[in-house]
Image (cartoon, rainbow, N blue to C red; front, top):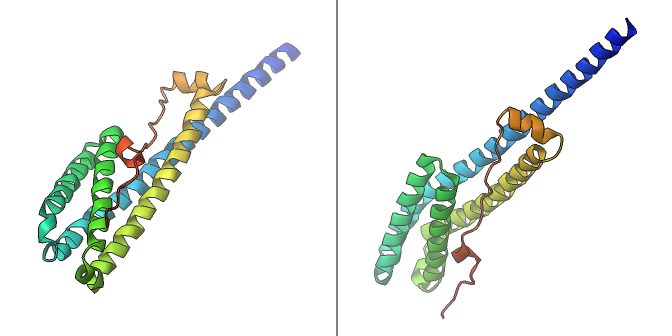
Length: 186
């Protein structure tokens, strides 16, 4: 009879452990999804600011027409990638857009009248703030992805994660062009 109690106790402990691992995996997965959602919100904010900035700058920057058109095109590509839901495509499109916005900030500095325009300066400040929030959201997302991926890859959690088909998330990584130094010509 005591053998039966021991067996029931072992089964109960294993069952409780499985429930604990499952709940931890679900919690970490949801945190990673929430972190991705935070990035999504900031990218939407960026996409909303860009048309206002471009239209404010257009009148001043007749020589920079190609840059403004490329920013508009990069914004459209980023919005399409955001709708597609592919993390890799979105990261590439957003990295390209970020590079274009950096070039715009450098170009704005070359136009003294433009720098003095309150609307443009306010939009540039908003855009800079948004870029900082995007960077913070990416770091937070990558931290959540690290925690989740570590949890599903470590023993014995990996056995439960494999049986329940938990798959790892991809990190949001910087494009190679973002790692290069920006050349500022004065």
